[in-house]
Length: 80
Image 1 (cartoon, helix red, strand yellow):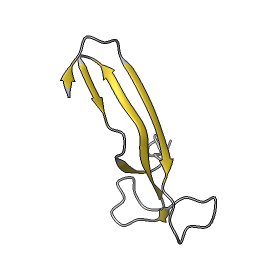
Image 2 (cartoon, one colour):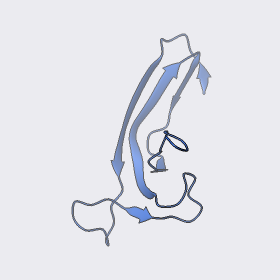
Image 3 (spheres, helix red, strand yellow):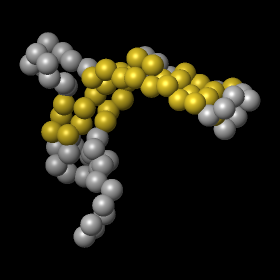
């Protein structure tokens, strides 16, 4: 990361990963992955960033080509 005087901006784009055992038009997903950060019953989807560029708060970086997993989050909390 490097210091920058730019205004805060972010550009991002990702593509879901596919594979030889993934049905056409579907994504690579794991249901109920062990140790899921968001609890049981979730679905993890893997993808790769095709564009990921940020500049703001005095910092600037690019992260394209890196992969990550994505989980849905329930922000309502207990009894929500």
